[in-house]
Image (tube, rainbow, N blue to C red; front, side, top):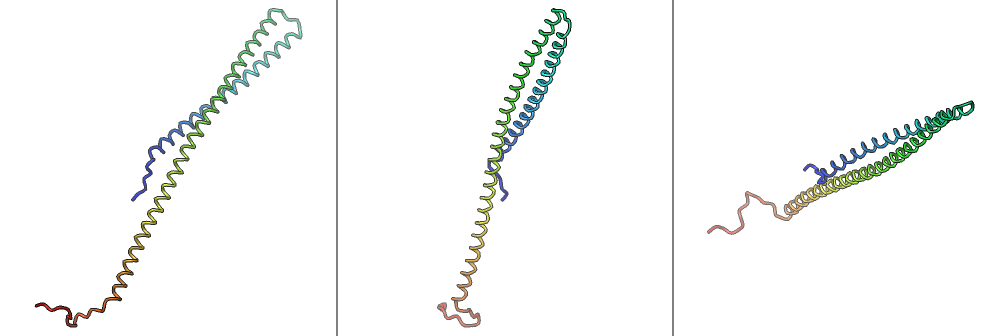
Length: 166
């Protein structure tokens, strides 16, 4: 008889859940990397703007243009803070997705171990049944051999010594 794991459907669902969780994790990690890259780009833009303002203040500058450049730097700093928050959020989401994936992976592995134990138990049962069958055959042969030694040999040519028909 072919082995059939009773929880095969559940196992298949767990495998699908793990794949979905792994895909979500990959997407979350990609989003976290993209947020990190955007943060680095934003930082470099702030540094460039600061350098421009510092260079502009070295020489004669109109007060309105200096103020405008400082406001631009302040706007870039606010954008940098928002991007930093997005990056932190993306990393947090990636961490939660990683935990969810690990939980799904653990569920899948638990069912694989359960299936393996069921297969091994089935093999052991079949081996035990086969051994019992072979033992039964050996006992029957031994019993027949013992019966053959106890009974007197039957000589078909000898007259019947039993009761005669009347």
